[in-house]
Length: 93
Image 1 (cartoon, helix red, strand yellow):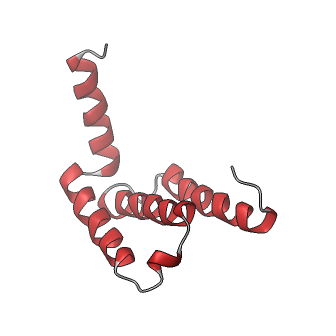
Image 2 (cartoon, one colour):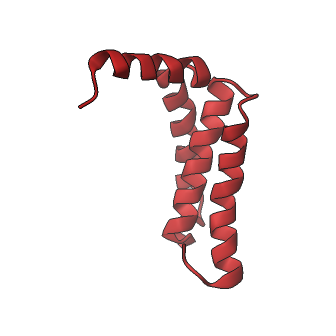
């Protein structure tokens, strides 16, 4: 079981990297809300929706926190690649 002190330490580290959770949540939800009202949103497959939502999550972290943290940018590319690879190969990951 995680010790409360360990959890507090982890949350503090994440906060210093990604900014406040409430700030991140606001940006992420605004982006996702924008996605969901687009006419073609319902035409997307589940992996496409999830990829876009995870990309929105990463964008929110970048905008709310440290824009120089390379992992956030790499993660965006990774989520896009998962869908791109499936569309190109027909193989689900």
